[in-house]
Image 1 (tube, rainbow, N blue to C red):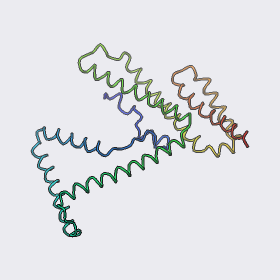
Image 2: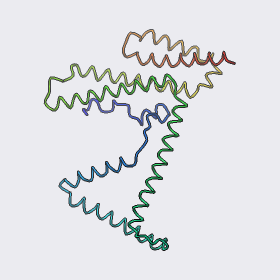
Image 3: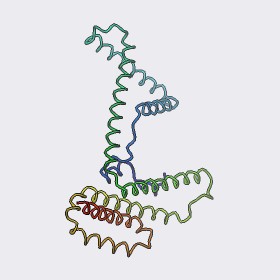
Image 4: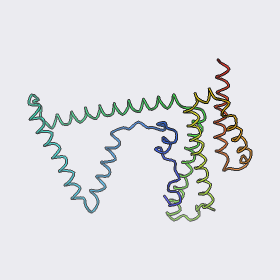
Amino acid sequence: MRDDLQGLEISQKELQKLTNLPVNDKLVIIINPLKKLGVNFLKKIKGSEGATVVFIGFSIIVFGYLLFDVIIKLFATWITIPSWILLIISGFWIGGVIQTILYLIWKKNSKFVKLNMTNSLLVLLNDVNRYNDVIKAIDINDQIEEAGNPEVSIKEREKVIEALKLTRTDLIRALKTEKILRENKNFILSNTELFINNLATLTAMQVTEQATEHGRLLNEALQIALDVQHEMRRLQSQR
């Protein structure tokens, strides 16, 4: 990725911090990290230090097995099956327990996100995905250009990057606004009159910036505020 694209993407970690929710949390399958570790190990074996890598890997496996064997002989003398079979069985059992724990954590996080999800946050998350997709598309285009296809070069690249920076700033602003309104909804419901001036100020900002692309996501933040105001009125009418 070129330097001017570095840091523009809104990562999952940053998004979770901005929303204070475990959004886009994916279930970790323990087999996948093991596969990745195996692929990296094979790559290093094919490299210039292959012999060293094989020796270290083999030493770790042998040392681990010997340590396991000693522990079994000292503390589990009643076990009669060979220690290497027990090691394999234990590996599968521990892997299953870890996977179950990871699933329960993922399930809990998914339920928590679902309970706290708002329509405005859903819209913003979709905007973040689209924004990140644009950066990924530019990165792929750059790779195609560097492969010997100068005709695909992005025209006025500096303006495109500047627009992405502005969009990123507005997205973060909107996400922060949504989080504040969502986490303080009960207080806002009971103190509606205190926020009338703030909503009026946001409306004025929308009028001055509504014709610009830079103001598009600021208007999204305004819409969040108006959505909350509408929700407040709806809830008050149900009393």
